[in-house]
Image (cartoon, rainbow, N blue to C red; front, side, top):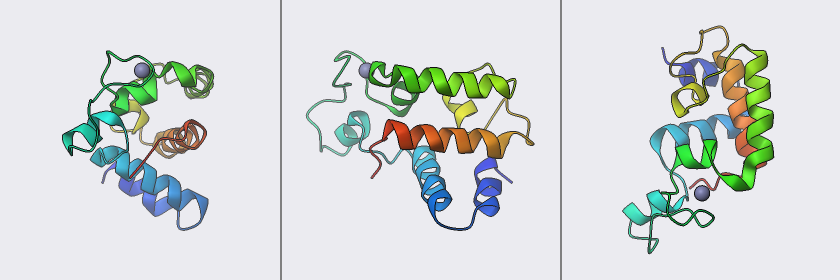
Length: 122
Ligand SMILES: [Zn+2]
């Protein structure tokens, strides 16, 4: 059973359901980020509006977006309290490198980040 499936089972409604939906969209790559929109021919280019030379993909949005530096710092700090020091997409989605007992907590932190970072999801 995947971490996302376990997480879905641990939440049932309200705010957390929205977070689950956000995580599912992240896993599927369905976002309003330029790289995805460009693949659908809905954006003239796939680049980040801030960096201009980097693809605006999920990993960039979640880990490198300069606009969300303070949110990245807060997320790193909270993950490090769980003894998680690797910050990459599989870790944020609790797919790898995260002990199963920490997976719901990691997914909740990722959801909280998505809320504050206002990831443009489809
Ligand atoms: Zn950028």
